[in-house]
Length: 598
Image 1 (cartoon, rainbow, N blue to C red):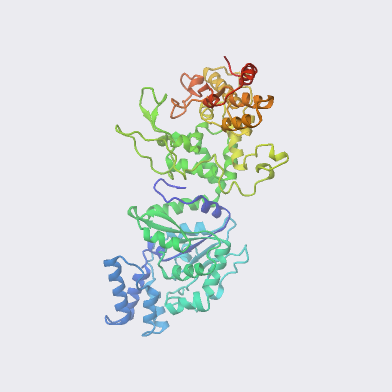
Image 2 (cartoon, rainbow, N blue to C red; image 1 turned 120 degrees about the horizontal axis):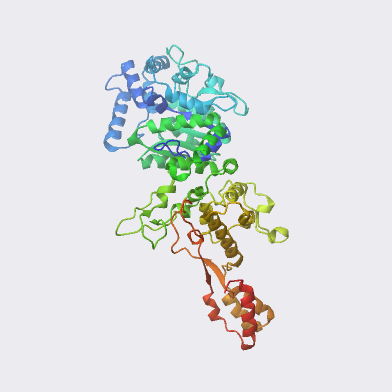
């Protein structure tokens, strides 16, 4: 879901996990680089060597220069990472000198822009007030952004087991003193040896983060997949039992190798285009932070916007409504809006309509300007459609992974009740399983908007509908006081739809089965009844000239604008030979069983 039109697409699962207080942000150097303009880890290494007066022929200086040259000329990253270079520096300088030089390089301007840090702090603060954020940065910009927040380092790590604990800002690799004269007593994790101590030999950092990942969803921001903290932590976890929960990382594209590197570590990359800068990312996080203050209030604001109807909204705004109805609580809130939200939202919820073939307003074989349903109802997350031109017409094919509000997803299938599962025998073997809770809420809304042309038009295209929906729509709409032409057309449409579902044919072709049984046992009364039942005339939907979008309800509307059915017969009836003595009784049974109008 996108909060802004050109923003980052945040997965629904991550948004829901955050609403439930199950997300922990891990912040790297990129956060302090974004708006505060501190150095990257590589630039920090270079500046530290300058402050220490490292000579050009020193191994650390040569290793850093070689790594920069290989990355620039060969586009190969991670040849010599900062932890290895700091390992070389420790051979010539003591930890106090290195720590002082690092701290001095982290001093920010007095008017530093802290908006990026504030945006993340809003997301890291639970609705109950606790802050849970982990950073491998040494600077105190988070603390400067919010002076009320507490800090922790190695010697004061919070107890992850306590659900109500206020972690504050956890500086996992150490932090500078308030006067930036050097690190606090726990020091910095900089060199390969110190990373090895934190993640391998003693493993205190590894154990702390593993406890987080066992209980929470991790979001890495400001890192690359080759950064030393990510490499030590996630590669170590992959060698054991891997990540317990899902993990995400913000990553610029196009950079397929970086996305693949995250994937190898079991982390899903949330991508955004580097060409437009990082502004879209920070505007997305700021908007997400506003939602995080009160997801319910944000949801009500979006549902109020949805009253305008899908045509009046942009794709990302329709995407926010789609996100809402993708959860049970959101679908319930959607169904409870009064007056009910427009039935035209069905055109967004149903990918068969959304990806429909462009055609003139009144149908494929009529005159008039061509209407593309995807322009009216498409989502920002939809795959782009191939444009129609004078030489080729786009086919209305639905991508395999197209979002649909009307089909159960993984969350819908969790915790199903007995009446929502098919049984082999007993009461539930004879009854169609009930709808999952989320879809049942949408069915309730559908019943409320059944008197709108868009709802009748949509239902008139469905080859099958769940009995629960049909039961909710059995109201005799002819008793309404409004006898407008639109109302009459809608009422006639629903009568035709109910008749169609009562007389629709069983999808199975039983002709071959009937022929085998007649051959084995000969003709008898029971077989004749089955023959009459299967081969009776039936109704089928006619979709060859249907409209690409529902009528607006303001002009002249007839039943044929909403639904079209035809009487049809099974061609397979010609393949089953009937004895002469059964012909007359069968003709009588076929007429009685058809229920069609002659």
